[in-house]
Every structure is written in structure tokens, then in C-alpha cells.
Length: 196
Image (cartoon, rainbow, N blue to C red; front, side, top):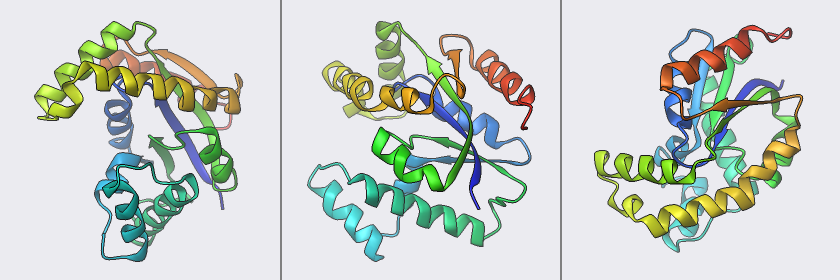
């Protein structure tokens, strides 16, 4: 059974986590942030050990392992009846991160819409990320050079995912609006989806 899925997509600082959390508070929507998945990993398990091997060396976890880890966590949430795929829609942010992950997940996800939180003003994103880093005590994220590197990585690896899903599924949402307006635009698109 494929999971009925809505993807929240956008550059670092575009508000993916905020919008995912908002949708996740609505009955019949289950929000899963990829970052939370990795932070909640039990490093005593074989998959957790594999993740630790890569992350402790500062390397990116290979796509197949990333998806496997994600599937294990989603399987657990289904087992605990937190996510009920027969009646709930899955809201994802942070995965799939690139075209390879999107291809691997094709047999798992029934993607209904990809909400692209668009913020062409890079300076506004950088400012937003710096503020968030200070507010959340993530001082390594406050470094402008680090932020610019993350934005370049996003443009090179993640933006092509929008082309993978194509214009029929991608909905561009202005991420510079206040969060409640962004949420309104996303919900309006979900409500008007004839496949609902």
C-alpha cells in the first residue's frame, strides 16, 4: 500500500518545519520531519549504528540507507497506531532530498502535491536562518558561510526534485508571507484537490 503523501519542499529557512507542524495538528494528517527521524534513532540498532558510522565521519548517509532508516521509523509509527495509512495523509519535510531518494521512494509514496515554499530572496533566507540559529542555540548554523553553502547544496541537489515530480504536482507557495498565510495557501490547494 502506498502512503498518500504531501511533500513540503523548500530551501533551508523557507519554513518547511513550521508548515509541517501546522498540518500535523490537523486530524487525519501525520507529519514526519526527516531531521526528527534521525534525531530519534536508536544507535544500538544495526541501522542506527550504520547512520552513526557516516555521521560521525561527517559524511552524508547514502540515499538507500537514508530511505531504509526512514521506512523503519515510519513502520514503527504505523505499528504504534500513530500513523494510520488507510485513513491518514503523510506530510513529509526533508525527504526525498534528491532525485535518487525520490526514485527509491516511488513505490512507497503516492505523492498528491509538492508544496514548494518559494523564497527567491536569498538574503531574506540568510537573515531568517541566522535569527533561528540564535533563537534555538544552533550557533554553527549562524555562520553565514555555512548558510550559503547549505543553500548552494539545496539548489544543486534538491531543486531538481521539483522537476522530477513535474508541474502537475508542484504548487509554488510564497514563503515570505506570514506563516498563517502560507498555511492557508497550502490548505486551499489540498481542499481543491479532486482526488482529496
